[in-house]
Amino acid sequence: MPQHRTVSRRAVAAWALYDAATQPVFTLLATFVFAPFFVSRLMDDPAEGQALWGVAAGTAGLIVGLATPPLGAIADRTGGRKLWIAGFSLLIVLGASALWFAVPGSAYAVPIALGGFVVATVGAECATAFTNAMMPTLAPPERIGRLSGLGWATGYVGGLIALAIALLLFSADPEDGLTLAGIAPILGLDPATSEGDRAAGPFSALWYLVFAAPLFLFTPDVTAGSPRGAVTAGLRDLWRTLKSLRRSPDLALFLAAHMLYVDGLTALFAFGGIYGAGALGWGPIETGVFGVLVIVSGIVGSLVGGWLDDRVGPERVVAWSLGLLTAAAVAIASIDRARILFVVPVTPPVPDDALFSSAPERLFIGLALVLGAASGPLQASSRSLLVRLAPKEKLTQAFGLFALSGKVTSFLGPFAVAAVTALTDSQRVGVSVLIAFFLGGAALLGAVRVPDARD
Image 1 (cartoon, rainbow, N blue to C red):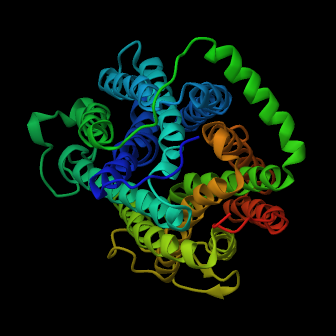
Image 2: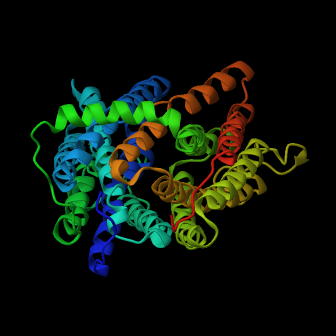
């Protein structure tokens, strides 16, 4: 595995831009624009729509979890990563572009929407496993944390800008046909057929092509070797790597911890907007602002977390982030329309009142800032912590296992919230189950022995 060599700032910036290139797949398609459109416009029953979307997201996660470890093993054998990234880029562009054809009322709208989402998500997640594995060639060990934080922060900026463009110019309120800026959608997009929401697909594809191009042009790749026998040898290497986890208890513990706390984080974000809508009566404007605030705080958190990562170590940054997320989950569970902190009575939100005018809403927005500020460093420092723990010659495989640990049980958090909510008929109690995911991840992380960066 080639070690770090001096590279230009342009090469590093191009690598960081790749996180921004893929971000609309998660921000626009999976969370704030296309997913709500699917549930509210393509499906007659929102509950059924949410269930189908969950199945699609789980299917994408399972494909990514199963595919990235063997593909990473093969890539470690052949050396080059850009060819793999290019292949998955095709999936991103095709999958996202297909969403334009999910026209409400058409016979194939639902399968097109679900299929396009799955294809684009698989492409984005798999490609990211290969760009992650490029980090040790771009920065020395003592600066990996800042590099990872820079990538996450750049991704958050990209997601914020893309979301703002979509909400202000494309996506229209179904009631009055106007965007968040109070104007008709640009380019003559027809609100009656939700062309603004559907345009999030091709817009994400175009965005990806523009911001992924610098990686291919300016970021150096390791020299690709002969593909002859790489598949068989790579899979054999992967099997040995999986068996070797018994001899690498720290890496195995970290992957188990990552599996738990990422499940909790994924569910917390997935249910954050739902909780706001159900418990506080939020509409699309409030939910959109909630998303923007989470992203902005994530940008700041990623940059600060990267700086702390190189000074105190990624394991401490991850532990501190988990502490903040646990506290935020407890506080979220304490909020409903008439109470905060479980027992303090407050005036409930009033329909058509000023934005976030009630105490529960203001507290929830404050917690959104905590969520964003903690989630950025958690994910960025998890990435740099893996670089310290994994064998350098098998780093792409390790990032494949990293993706597997973050995806293979991604259904557990949402399922746990749904099951507890159904059993208790309480959104608050349902969300509180995520506290166990964060505490369990923190407990496993505490047992991991992390080598010094200089080693």
